[in-house]
View 1 (cartoon, rainbow, N blue to C red):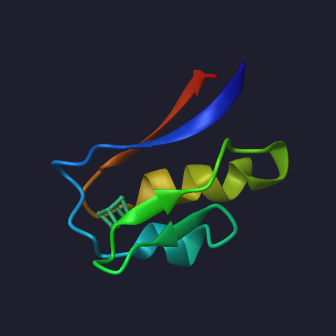
View 2: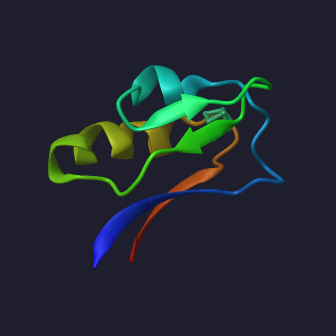
View 3: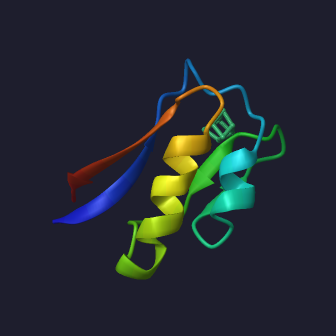
Length: 66
Ligand code: SF4
């Protein structure tokens, strides 16, 4: 089990703030939509929570999963 960062695609408006908050885990595609590069490791958990909190569309959440 690991922590994953999930994107609610219909809500995401490609503003890219999650990449600014979490550049080690989130890249942006050419249209500005996030690409999450793997699970949230312990060292990234605080920043991942910050990304969830600050997403202007509330389109991010942390889930426990594989
Ligand atoms: S901060 Fe939220 S709305 Fe902006 S790109 Fe990331 S997930 Fe989408």
